[in-house]
Amino acid sequence: MHYTIHQLQILLKVAETGSITKAAEALHITQPAGSAQLKKLQEQFKLPLMEQLGKQVYFTDFGREILLLAEDMANKMNEINCKTHSYKGGLTGRLKLATVSTGKYVLPYFLTDFLS
Image (cartoon, rainbow, N blue to C red; front, side):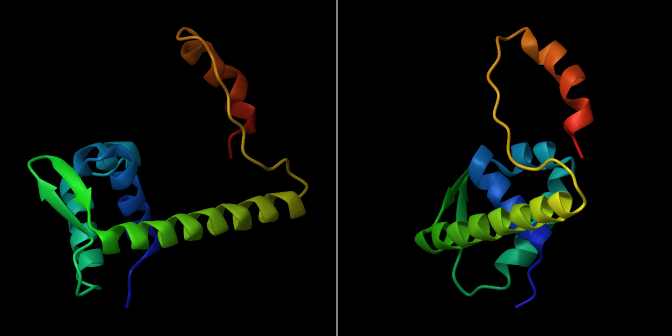
């Protein structure tokens, strides 16, 4: 099996957004590129990962199992990045913020120094 991290990231984003088009937009790739990567990922398995009805995507039981494993892998990759930053002396971790609707215009200005 030769699936890539990128393909798993696309799969996770499709699960999050419920749409290949929305996932592609969120990942800053074209919809055909996202679909092609998902097709290559699907070819690795004899069982279907998802079914598409109209524009809505539904994951099969097998697909949901693969999603759980892909989420674990994504979390482990995040841990690797955090460890790397911490060994370099950087501040690491996950930050969750809540703000009022107008804060979305101001908050990015204050957070740019923290983005890697």
